[in-house]
Each structure stands twice: as C-alpha cells, then as structure tokens.
Image (cartoon, rainbow, N blue to C red; front, side, top):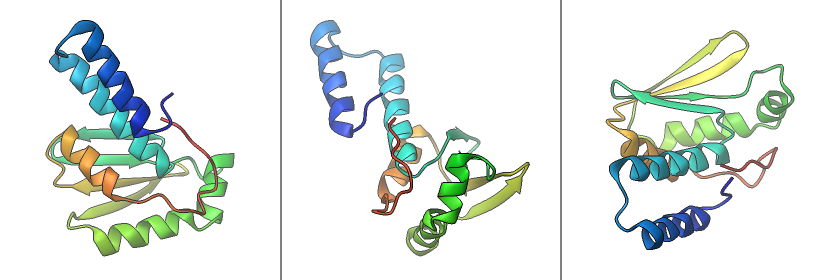
Length: 131
C-alpha cells in the first residue's frame, strides 16, 4: 500500500534496523514493491518479467479504469513517450478486450524497475493508484 518510493525506502530501513542485513528474498520483495509502484503510476495492472522480456498488462477496455485510461488520452501519451525515449523494442498486443505491451531486452527485475522508473506519469492521469 505504499504510495511513494519514500515509504518503500522507510520500510527497507525499518526491516534492516529490526532484522539486520536483508535476505535475498526480502530484497526481491522490496524490488517487486518498487516495480509495482512504478507500474501503478502508469496504470499498469500486472507486470511479468521473464525470458528477457517484460509484459505490461493494462486494464480491460470495457472496465471503468480502462475507459478512463484510453478515453483520456493517457495511454496514447504513454505510447508516445515509449516511442520517443526507449532504446528497447516493444510490441503491442490487443487480445480479449485488453492491451499488453511486451518490452524486449529486459534482462532481469532490476532492469524492469529501471525501465519503468524512467517513464514519467502524466499530470492528466485519469485515476489515482497506489502500489
């Protein structure tokens, strides 16, 4: 339920203070939380990384969130930013009333976090979301 990176970092510090050096599993949990935070700013419902790819699942077109996402122009702005600022190839897949982006050459979850963190949320975001 963290709404900012500061909250995630505070959580990391609290865990470190309480339990000492974090295990690899705990670090991955925090990394997943950061990925979810960055993805939620972009209204992404689900992120999957594997086989040097990242899949970004957006809300279904016929859902309230989906209608706001696509009707507001937010999705189009995001696509323009991806096209203008990304060195990664991507594919757009529309299937069963939803849109997925596949971003290529994402080697690991850390690379996914870096990619998502560089995409900026827009002032005109149609809904407020939290990680």
